[in-house]
Length: 141
Image (tube, rainbow, N blue to C red; front, side):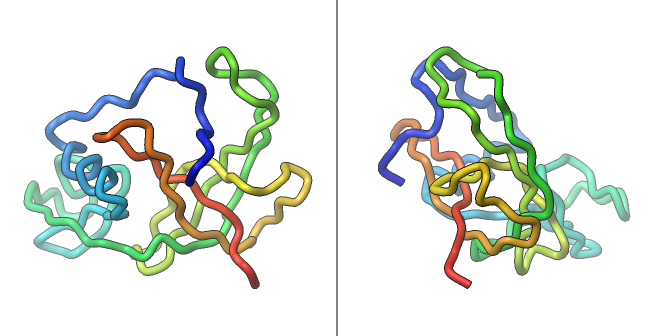
Protein backbone atom coordinates (compact mmCIF):
# COMPACT_ATOMS: atom_id res chain seq x y z
CA UNK A 1 0.00 0.00 0.00
CA UNK A 2 1.68 3.23 -1.05
CA UNK A 3 -0.59 5.79 0.61
CA UNK A 4 -0.63 6.14 4.39
CA UNK A 5 -4.03 5.59 5.97
CA UNK A 6 -3.16 6.87 9.46
CA UNK A 7 -1.56 10.26 10.01
CA UNK A 8 1.99 10.43 11.40
CA UNK A 9 0.68 11.58 14.80
CA UNK A 10 -1.17 8.30 15.40
CA UNK A 11 0.43 6.39 18.30
CA UNK A 12 1.81 2.97 17.32
CA UNK A 13 0.29 -0.21 18.77
CA UNK A 14 2.08 -1.84 21.68
CA UNK A 15 3.31 -5.44 21.60
CA UNK A 16 3.68 -7.72 24.60
CA UNK A 17 5.04 -11.26 24.98
CA UNK A 18 1.76 -12.76 23.74
CA UNK A 19 1.30 -10.52 20.69
CA UNK A 20 4.95 -10.03 19.65
CA UNK A 21 5.04 -13.04 17.25
CA UNK A 22 1.93 -11.65 15.52
CA UNK A 23 3.54 -8.22 15.07
CA UNK A 24 6.80 -9.82 13.85
CA UNK A 25 4.88 -11.78 11.18
CA UNK A 26 2.99 -8.60 10.22
CA UNK A 27 6.29 -6.74 9.74
CA UNK A 28 7.10 -9.47 7.16
CA UNK A 29 3.66 -8.95 5.54
CA UNK A 30 2.41 -12.33 6.73
CA UNK A 31 -1.03 -12.62 8.32
CA UNK A 32 -1.05 -15.26 11.05
CA UNK A 33 -3.55 -16.47 13.63
CA UNK A 34 -2.76 -18.18 16.88
CA UNK A 35 -3.71 -21.86 17.08
CA UNK A 36 -3.98 -24.01 20.19
CA UNK A 37 -1.48 -26.89 20.08
CA UNK A 38 -3.89 -29.13 22.04
CA UNK A 39 -7.33 -28.65 20.45
CA UNK A 40 -6.32 -26.70 17.29
CA UNK A 41 -8.83 -23.89 18.04
CA UNK A 42 -7.70 -20.69 16.28
CA UNK A 43 -7.93 -17.32 17.98
CA UNK A 44 -7.43 -13.67 17.23
CA UNK A 45 -6.38 -11.50 18.89
CA UNK A 46 -3.61 -13.62 20.39
CA UNK A 47 -4.14 -14.72 23.98
CA UNK A 48 -1.98 -16.58 26.52
CA UNK A 49 -4.55 -19.37 27.09
CA UNK A 50 -6.95 -21.22 24.78
CA UNK A 51 -10.56 -20.23 25.56
CA UNK A 52 -11.79 -23.72 24.58
CA UNK A 53 -9.46 -26.13 26.43
CA UNK A 54 -7.41 -23.74 28.64
CA UNK A 55 -4.07 -24.95 27.23
CA UNK A 56 -1.19 -22.48 27.32
CA UNK A 57 0.53 -24.15 24.34
CA UNK A 58 0.05 -22.57 20.92
CA UNK A 59 1.60 -22.07 17.50
CA UNK A 60 0.92 -19.80 14.52
CA UNK A 61 -0.95 -20.53 11.31
CA UNK A 62 -0.45 -18.34 8.25
CA UNK A 63 -3.67 -17.49 6.41
CA UNK A 64 -4.11 -16.02 2.91
CA UNK A 65 -5.59 -12.62 3.85
CA UNK A 66 -8.88 -12.91 2.01
CA UNK A 67 -12.34 -12.57 3.46
CA UNK A 68 -15.56 -10.63 3.36
CA UNK A 69 -17.07 -7.69 5.17
CA UNK A 70 -19.08 -9.03 8.11
CA UNK A 71 -20.12 -5.57 9.34
CA UNK A 72 -18.75 -2.02 9.32
CA UNK A 73 -19.19 1.50 10.61
CA UNK A 74 -18.31 4.88 9.15
CA UNK A 75 -16.34 7.08 11.55
CA UNK A 76 -16.90 10.84 11.29
CA UNK A 77 -14.69 12.04 14.17
CA UNK A 78 -10.90 11.88 13.97
CA UNK A 79 -8.80 9.74 16.31
CA UNK A 80 -5.67 11.80 15.54
CA UNK A 81 -5.02 15.23 14.06
CA UNK A 82 -4.87 15.23 10.28
CA UNK A 83 -6.97 12.11 9.80
CA UNK A 84 -9.12 12.07 6.68
CA UNK A 85 -12.84 11.69 7.33
CA UNK A 86 -14.97 9.71 7.12
CA UNK A 87 -13.08 6.43 7.42
CA UNK A 88 -14.36 2.90 7.78
CA UNK A 89 -13.79 0.40 10.57
CA UNK A 90 -14.87 -3.06 9.49
CA UNK A 91 -15.11 -6.57 10.87
CA UNK A 92 -13.66 -8.96 8.30
CA UNK A 93 -14.64 -12.65 8.28
CA UNK A 94 -11.30 -14.28 7.37
CA UNK A 95 -11.07 -17.23 4.98
CA UNK A 96 -9.19 -20.35 6.13
CA UNK A 97 -8.99 -19.05 9.70
CA UNK A 98 -11.30 -21.40 11.54
CA UNK A 99 -14.13 -18.86 11.60
CA UNK A 100 -12.19 -15.88 12.94
CA UNK A 101 -13.02 -12.24 12.35
CA UNK A 102 -10.62 -9.31 12.43
CA UNK A 103 -11.29 -5.63 13.03
CA UNK A 104 -9.47 -3.44 10.52
CA UNK A 105 -9.96 -0.55 8.13
CA UNK A 106 -11.24 -0.68 4.57
CA UNK A 107 -9.20 1.30 2.08
CA UNK A 108 -9.51 2.06 -1.64
CA UNK A 109 -13.30 2.23 -1.40
CA UNK A 110 -15.70 5.07 -0.77
CA UNK A 111 -17.81 4.82 2.39
CA UNK A 112 -21.01 4.84 0.29
CA UNK A 113 -19.82 1.86 -1.82
CA UNK A 114 -19.60 -0.62 1.06
CA UNK A 115 -21.73 -3.74 1.34
CA UNK A 116 -22.04 -6.50 3.89
CA UNK A 117 -20.55 -9.60 2.24
CA UNK A 118 -18.21 -7.58 -0.01
CA UNK A 119 -15.12 -9.70 -0.81
CA UNK A 120 -11.90 -8.13 0.41
CA UNK A 121 -8.17 -8.79 0.33
CA UNK A 122 -5.35 -7.86 2.64
CA UNK A 123 -3.00 -4.93 1.99
CA UNK A 124 -0.25 -3.86 4.36
CA UNK A 125 0.40 -0.33 5.56
CA UNK A 126 4.06 0.07 6.47
CA UNK A 127 4.24 2.46 9.40
CA UNK A 128 8.00 1.96 9.85
CA UNK A 129 10.68 -0.61 9.06
CA UNK A 130 9.43 -2.75 11.98
CA UNK A 131 5.70 -2.07 11.94
CA UNK A 132 3.09 -3.04 9.35
CA UNK A 133 -0.66 -2.74 9.91
CA UNK A 134 -3.18 -4.95 8.04
CA UNK A 135 -5.85 -3.15 6.02
CA UNK A 136 -8.37 -4.58 3.58
CA UNK A 137 -9.57 -3.43 0.17
CA UNK A 138 -12.32 -4.73 -2.11
CA UNK A 139 -11.49 -7.51 -4.56
CA UNK A 140 -13.06 -8.10 -7.95
CA UNK A 141 -16.10 -10.39 -7.76
